[in-house]
Length: 279
Image (cartoon, rainbow, N blue to C red; front, side, top):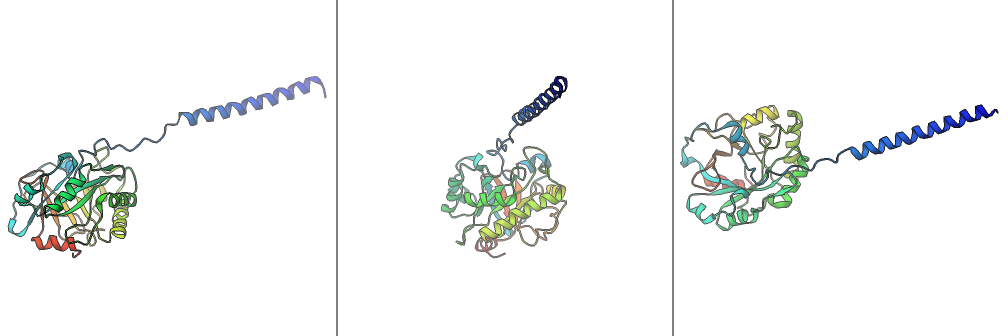
């Protein structure tokens, strides 16, 4: 073989080596430049509570006109209110309450112990609710997180089943970037897991407008999960598909009780039945 041919072969081998080294360097650079997945945003968790986004998006249409004799007055609270004076709440007429326990899989209400246990000590029937974050993790994972941080149920006659607060996304796109089929599946994943773990069906807290917009007005849950409806107007209004009646109506953002004002749809005996496990 001539020196010229041998020289050309050696040059080709060096070019191949250099090209390979360049590709490896480029790949390493691309990997180094790829940002890590951003941590879920919980910056608003202290101030997110049942209805904050519903009031923001839907507003207030008037004061409720109901026969209070056929309703049972209650309320819901969260950590942003700080310690609650439960004795005063009972004196003001509260019969039941819901307390925010968790949000997503990364936030626990720092006031939960005082609020949840304090309500029980004052003689109130109480339950916990979870602020849904379909944008950060799955429904089953959030149901388990909720139960692990106070959202379970006990057959003591004073504990209401947990509630799923599913409403407008406070961090971005109102439906959490999901289409109706995927969001319905997420809710089903949460409620199915809650039932399996807690042995009770969770209540679903929502508004009719959000439900129509983000789930396509699915009627999938009306026969299994009691409805806690938010509407700040003179009456409860149209119900989401699938439910023939509501169990709780959140009718005002404030009133004589701490936090949001609610009516249970029936006398106190109905509230007690829900706590005991009857429909």
